[in-house]
Length: 493
Figure 1 (cartoon, rainbow, N blue to C red):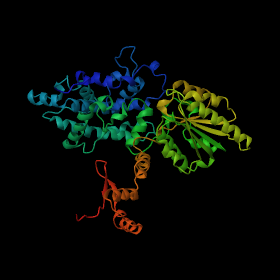
Figure 2 (cartoon, helix red, strand yellow):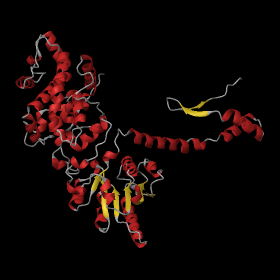
Figure 3 (cartoon, rainbow, N blue to C red):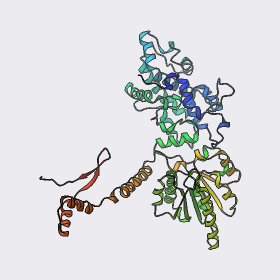
Figure 4 (cartoon, one colour):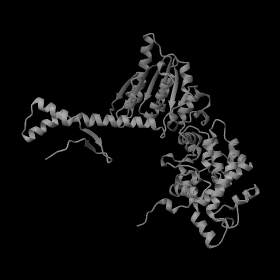
């Protein structure tokens, strides 16, 4: 029986629409997400040739366009931007329909300007008007793809003017050019990747990209696109305030908050915060020598949350208090109540001791802590949020009351190999030591062997046996993950 999927029944446009459906819902259905700008993704989408309908052109009135129509109109009036867009449209269509176009050109002796069902003729005509004589006689299809690359080379740099200066232009530029793009072989390699992972490319438009299934729609909005783009270039995008409608309440850097603080209390809601991102921000504060102003970091955890918090608790440089809550009912957590009580008690006790806490950081995307902020006016608050987990109502409440907030998302990404490796390695070592090595005692094993064999050894013989044979052996792990003994002594019998 052949493989079957719903996707196989849909044409390319419908599959692209289905792929991005959840991220193109009308705004009234997205009220739980903070508002994010789409200025950068609209400009990139135009240049790489995303279909007009996603800009609201020729759509029904009830459709909510993914990209800004104003950006489309602005860039479409520019000759350089039009050239890049139409070249990218042609490259995507040729990559997507290569076999069918190849058959038409060779079997029916047609050129690409005579295959309207497979090649966008308006793109060819517009390129001709803009001074790009793309269609040539007796041109092979694979040579046309090389032509796209060569035509893009001088025109893509002229589109830098459409990208703000605070965005690193080389990262955008790299989307248009592949390694050895001026050769047939280089384009064949790119075509193989595109053919295999086509549904993972943004709206199935070809770009120089290595798709990751976990990325989803990278052109959803600026707040998603730029961190991923920077990550792929081994960099980090910090300034989330430029890509969200955050207003004056958002801060660009936590150092601004620490500069005005004397004694800072940090409360972490382990149930509503990503441990990797919290570890990332703590490492950043440590690197900037800001930990000295923190009097305590309170971790309030639930028995059902991630074991990754152990990695943070092992950091001896942090003034940590870890509090684990129990559940009276399996479906009901007590973290928010426990954290509120312990937070208020800490503030009260510090004041009574003559060491008042003037500033506090809440690391949580949960709006349940708003009453704590509201009822403690003597404390300056900074709320550290995760972009995708912050509800619109909470975001609006913080903004309306001038409570500064900061997005911690950029301090840990899937590409942060060093941090991810350290967290995983710590957990693996703990698991091995606590659950395996702690249960192994070589002298107990020797005693069981002697008993089983009905033999005896003196303490001196046991010590000599250990020094000569046991101490030289080690435990290693095979490629399948199994534990094996190394340096086993050679046995004669």
